[in-house]
Image (cartoon, rainbow, N blue to C red; front, side, top):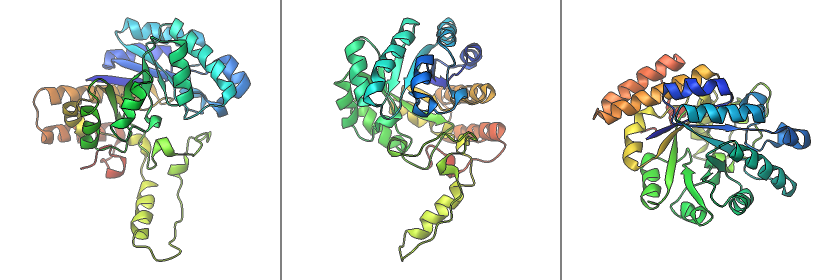
Length: 312
């Protein structure tokens, strides 16, 4: 299995590849895009500056450093949708990245996928989790459009993901493993994540009251109350590494564009150690013990089912 890590700056590449990252991905906002659309219209579903590769020069350095360390680099162009007048600039930015050696593009918008395939017929295309691969037919549809790799939604269990993979043997699949879990279904979420304090709508504390009788109200209110008291940036799925490997997952994806390099490197090392333990024939109990130890070491707290990617 591969380890796919976020990257924002060229000086992070060597640290990440040395830690064990096989693949890197990042977002890039060109000067021409920023001038015309600003970060409020981000092309990569991140709306704050530290989650962006700052310049084309920096992007080229990242790609060179990634390749020097034996890793591949994927450009994130995964906003859920674009306006008609944005496609021309997207293709220009994709051209710059591919000319610099980018190995693939991660996309979600159907219009962009069609245009990328027409403009770059040999381009390796990955479908973002925003593409909503909730069943076995979705990869078959996008495969016809030239997409070869898919990021499974956070909401799928290991058996559900395994079923999708089994029914699409000619495709590759990524699964989330660290950081960034959300209580909402990301591919259907309409919230804007541009608060300068990086507090997202799902993290706000709400007062919820049932206006009329509903047997589900109590559990919904309790779930929201509990979610508002955990840190979504402390999500983890290390316990499921063995199950994900057996399911046929190709790469384990770490969230964290815009995060500190210490968190990125720590996440890569933790995933690499869990993979090594799973490959040694360790039991699920031993893997769970390692996961809890790594989790506490990174976040200073016990794991919670609300930020567990694959709760049992």
